[in-house]
Amino acid sequence: MKKILSLTFIMLCAVLSVEAQDIVNLRMDRQQMGLRGSVASMDEDILIRKDYFREDWTERKWFVKDLRNVLQEDNGRIVTFNPAGRMTTITYTHQGKQGKKTTCTYASNGLLSSFLGEGYKVEAKYNGNMADINVFVETKNYQGSVNLAKADLNTAPYTNTYPFDLKCRQELGDDGLVLSSNYYYVDSMPAKICVYNYNHLNQLMSEKVEDYTSGEKQVKTVRYTYDNHGFLIKKVLHSKSLDETVTYVNNKLGDCTKMTVERPYGTVVYTFDYVYDSMDNWTVRLQFEDGIFDNAALRTFTYHKETKTTKQAEKPEKPKVKAAQSDKEKAALDKQAEKDRKAAEKKAAQEAKAKQKEELKAEQERIKEAEKNMTAEERKAYRAERKAAEKAAKEKADAEKRAEKERIAAEKKAAKEIAAAEKRAEKERKAAEKRAEKERKAAEKQAEKERKAAEKAAKKAANN
Image (tube, rainbow, N blue to C red):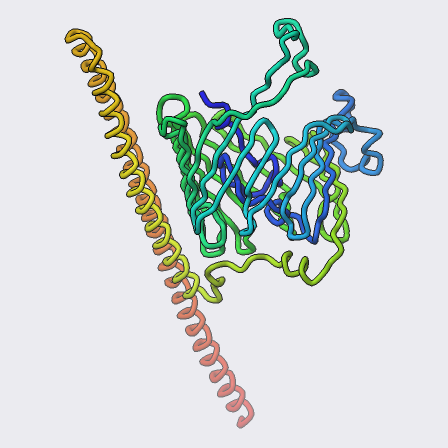
């Protein structure tokens, strides 16, 4: 229904990084892309195979030193950053030729104030921890002499306009993290609602997206899991159309070396090999799908000259809550994070309820206005139709509520069973340790008894 809602800025970030599935991403910087050092620009090219019939493609790395001759250049991009690490431009390339360009500007708080490119224009203004965002979609106005039925629209001359498409209200954390996004059409009808939760290290733990663009409510949830180093190791996506589990294996720098994508209709395993520069940014990445070479990505970096200011800007942001130093402290932090999550969910639910109430009132007024010009028979048919639609919507909402309740109950049951199994295992372990200790003491006692008997026998033999 609305083309804008398919837009995501994931393409601006590292393929394997954690990225909220939102239309507007207010934080676009090199740290988010997983880049290290004061990167000024990154020229990235994707190279694909020229020959798909060679039997030795499964042999890795034999062609690394000669990639540009062995492979053919496909798509790419040139990304530039200011000294503070904010992304400023993206120039897309195809087979070495530069094409469309995207530009970004930032407000005094370091978050996005404007974005122009990829068919969209975004403008953001801030008031404390709230962001008001307008989204405009590009419209191509071809010249009157262009025959749209026959012309090549990729080369035909046109002018651009950007009519208003969506408005968005975002709630931000003190550090600029997006807590929730509410998108609306011009008539204030909801288009998309996104809610995010983070752990005590400000890492995204879960997201919930309610999408109304198809005419009915579509819900998608994503949950993330990290290891002790803070690297993403698992992502679980659930929606009506897709269930997907992605697991990651990372190297010591946090770059993914193995990614397993599990879907109901099959599993695909991707593996990656890297070559790095002196700043630990990868310059070559080879991608293999189920063991067969798929593509290579080449990156060339330039760096800003390090100054006191840029070094300061490059330091990772301190988390709002300090990292746990012990199991007890970690448990307390996790408890606080869970408490904050529940409070955020409660607040979001209250706001959604208030918004729903406003929308219901507006809808009732529109219905009342529409019925004024109807005949009695038309009004009766219209009310019957509306009542049936409301009943269907209520039944669907009730079904979704029951499904969510059953899912939560299943999760609680599974957690309870796991805890019980762990408790049994711990009990059995302690019992085994106790038996082993008892047997050890018995063995020592027997050995001591035998030693004394031997000494007594030896003494008796010596006296004889």
